[in-house]
Image (tube, rainbow, N blue to C red; front, side, top):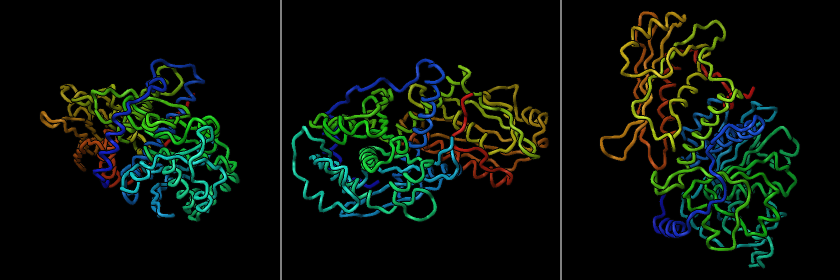
Amino acid sequence: MKKVKWLTNVLIVLLMSCGMVAEAATATPTKVPDKATFVQAFEEAKRVSLAVATCAGTYVPGGKAVEYSYLSEYGFKVTPYSQKVNGVTVNFMVSTNQNPYKGKKMTVMAFRGSASKDDWKLDLTTGQKPFDPNDTLNAKKKAKATDEEDSSALPQIHKGFNAYTLAALQCKVDIDGDGVPDDIPQTLLKNPDRTLLLTGHSLGGAVATLYGEYLAAKGVPKEQIPIITFGGPAVGNAAFAKEYGDKVNLLRLTTTFDPVPASLQKLGGYKQFGKNQVYDLAGTYTDNQHSISYYFDLALRYFFNLEDQGITAGYLPPLPLTQKTGDEAPVAIALTAMEHEPDARFAPDIKHFVMEEYLSIFPSYTVIESNLDKNATDKNFRQLLAMADKVGAKYLVTLEVDRHRVAQTNQWFVGINQGIFTVPKGNMLSIDTHNTRVTFQQGIVQATMNAAEQCKNTVREKLPFVKQNQPLITREVF
């Protein structure tokens, strides 16, 4: 990511002086709700997980992010867009999937947050202009003619965010995956079975919100264009929030001390709208809570917690530890417990993540150990081979997932050690060790995903029958 030092410092000073307004309850499930409420929360958590993964990849140039390699395994085709329109350079990703989910085909449009000098300039263009829902794709002259300050009683929006949004609306985009650019409003209106999930982080969240408002103004039903933002600032004044806030379905994710979502309100003349969920991230955990990496970690943590609660309540089936598909002999899986658990208050269960990933690639499998103590003396390698042979496996895959600190530093790594062996002889086909550093730009989930992808590539190489077996959105409610 390119850094514009002086602009960054100006913005950080401005934002850190603003503080965070508590707008809603924390997004940490505390008790199991009734079934109908759980179903709604669970489906929403699935969309949030998809949205945050797509947002995280927008910061990697050219669509080369590991997040997109991960999504491609589940049928998503990710296309990067970077175009300059009317002097504004827009950056976003479009992810299409032709596999319907609950009768709907999903496309995700994710707008990148601030990562260039031009982005920061738009962020700091905090003046307002009247919102004209009839701005068209060729409305440059019209927008210029109405670009004067107006009464605060009229709906007004952030000039910089609006300039970016109008430029994005002019980009030729393929949202149905056929390789041909679409008239997006008309495509959605003619195909009510397609959902366009609009999402973005920071500046990208503001653009996603306004993009949705313009589509809604053209008659697209708000149920067809859900909006999910992460650390997004307000986009307009109180009159805009009152008149247009309910025209879209907006879910805003924020952290406890992320200063950006409340920054423009502190300057005056801005008001947030939509549903707000706050991830409870302590100030002692990090002094900068705006990074998409934290949102990724907290979103997955929330999803896993909700999933566990659904299993406990009997709403969801437990993770299947045995599956038989076709004539292929099962692969035996043994997962070793971590020696250094990450702080469960703020970090997702990465062992849970890795287990679900591996179960999705084997047509047939049996988990012979899901929480093996590394120091256990009653489960040595030969005994694991015997257990694998007993269940009829031809191969044994051993996994050790760990998050560890380097000496006394604050540097953390996620590591996965993987072994692939024949059963019953125990001939070694491969040994893999992959460690990925956890950074401000690459959190726990992204580091885990990076290491897991490398290990899974080895599995595919050594076991040719392995494939991606499950769709991305699984675990249906009973």
